Length: 191
Length: 191
DNA sequence: TAAGATAGCGAACGAGCGTTCGATAGTCAA
DNA sequence: TTGACTATCGAACGCTCGTTCGCTATCTTA
Image (tube, rainbow over the protein chains, first blue to last red):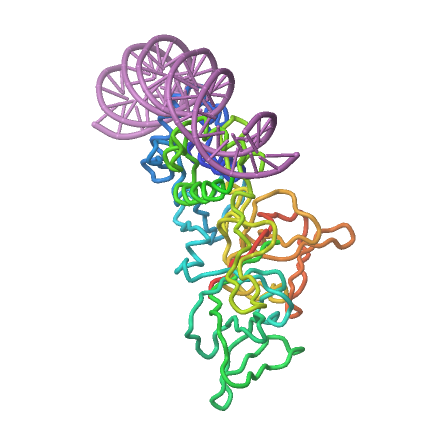
């Protein structure tokens, strides 16, 4: 039933708030189901649909699917608080979207506005994939004077240079070798 | 005792893997404690230290502090800044970081460059919390002519207007009521 | 070395857990 | 209209849960 949609929402909100799933009795109370067996049936449906799972010790746990967000592509008839997403608009988790090699990936907080014109603002989190290899045009985290700096990598007369994306800042022309920490692959901003 | 440190690590690993905490008996098994009362004592210590908590329905749940990473960070080259978000609002996942109310939150893909000066570029995903209430200064997704538009909400002579952040675009002054789909709370960009 | 604190063990216990089952009401298709 | 299917309720049940208590072993420190 499409009640399940709103049940799932409630569960997701509860989990987001507490980082744990409630007992069947509490779920029932939360969702307005008076009988634990209704909850059990619903849980079974969710397990089948891939939203919930059991840990090895038989405890209820959310799956990856549980955390997917709907992607509202097209103009939706925005009537009421009905959960959209039914349609084909894909769903995804942001982590999966941004991070391909978790062990190689770190987040770096942006300081300063030297990359402002590339839409990278102070306080943003930059998703960086640690890699030796960077190529011209990549935005990279380089280590200059023991400090991280985020700049666009470019080539001038066969030499690598670091270009800020803000006219107020100068191009960096490092002498000798250039130490690259990693390549920017994504960005996260929280308002 | 400093055993607690490794107990915590094991718990963290377990949680990262299953997104749920095990029962006392399972915890005991996991940590090598043979008695549930030892587990109870340990849990009490962790609650005191602010790593664990109980949900309103008395279930064990991790706190924000549970997810803190040891500031350790490789001591590599003095002065190397610690790449992980060193702020206090630390989150396990990016989804967690950005999304507070999963059921009300959707992602919307940005079209056009009308918000360029706010660091929002074409192709970015905007994290939108569906809400009736938006206030002056918020960046909102509004519905104009059945289309989503992302603009900053402002007030002009008691009327709501939608301001692009790009001088090349005009301010939108909707006649009559303004339909707000939701408020932007975050942004995700993949390169 | 004696006193006190800190972990941990093991047993006992009642409350609450998730399961199961039969019954009911609503929906949909034949 | 009938029959299959689904979502829910309510009650019953056994088992596991987290709690509690008394005990021991190991550290710490005065």
